[in-house]
Image (cartoon, rainbow, N blue to C red; front, side, top):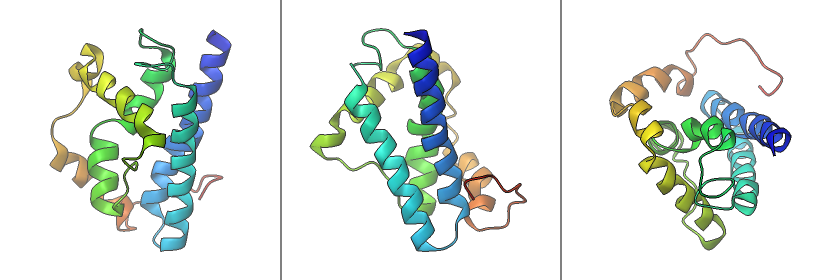
Length: 141
């Protein structure tokens, strides 16, 4: 299970965290849509594998901890919604995501480390969204 968890953590980091920045950085709609599609595809794969309420069942795991900062709370529900009008669709195929998200939002480790200052998050990511951030090009950009 540990090797599988490392594989999923790496994949989700590549497919979600990387695409988070691509979605923010790209200034044209076509590239934004590609990044959003990649993110949603990864979330859907995650949903199909997630045993619930956490990735491997009742206990939070490395996979949950790796991806939660990108899929739960301010980055997803404030930053991407605000700057790119992006959200995970509220459809049956993504229902496992919402169950997982709700479990993560209640977990003491997440609660203790999540920032409640949504306006500060917007200020941090504004430069990415408006194209003024100084960045180093990655293989995905």
